[in-house]
Image (tube, rainbow, N blue to C red; front, side, top):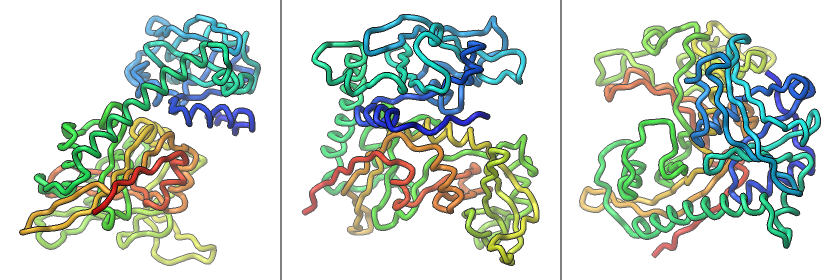
Length: 403
């Protein structure tokens, strides 16, 4: 896997401008080999972006040229627009690794340059971040395709977040009773008040915006997403095998379960911990000895399960491209809980490289909730509230007046 190089100062300004205008995008670096062979890897972030935007689902695409898909495309420059197409396909060779190519892109880019992919209204827009000054085009007194595109996307994105914020202010600024009795009652009640059905899939809750709600005094960690291990690369091949090997029978249960938190900092009482294996591009859950070695690490005894980092990146991008983190305060009257919203943190565009680092630093952990009485095995990736700015650098805080 070839990782994209870091942005230079000019490219960072372009990316920052797009983020500030609430333009969602994916990026690709054009390699010399890619230009010569007219082929580009559809990286995990690109695949996640295409899936989220309804452009294409590589997972369900068959291999071979006969299954290639073509997408209407516009390459935008400071001077105008070039209409073309982008091919999305999986070759018969190379294990069917996802590929793409923007026809004519060689006339608008050089090797090692980076361009953005912006999906809007069924069309894919391409802008060379290394060459085009996006802010200058947007601020120009002359109308141009870049300015028109950004305005259209920004106005749509702002209208959705403003609409959602208005609904929350109207319906949850004052004390309201909870009607859902569950550990996740606040989150469920917030969605109920907004008319959102239970979200059991992997997409955001409200028109592309994910909602995460909790009691402000009780919430130390927030759930990012759930993701089962990749059993193909795991030593143990099911949740049942993990429970059999490391589970226990708690008070009130008649069967083994495993309700524990795993961190990369140290093993938990069951000897389980995490390790980011950059060489394999995996996150591993391992069994460790409890004794600390001289170098400050713990000796691994057994592999347990693993996730591909690319899969976790895709889940993060799909779920949290834009998120409302809703804090509420609660009180109890006559045995019934009431709550009201106190603040919202509005985040956008998580940094994928930071996700791996935060796992390594123990700031993102994984909860195993296996063999529950309520049914369903869950592997929940969680982050501490104070660590959110490290993963989501772009945020706004909305506060609600109190009595």
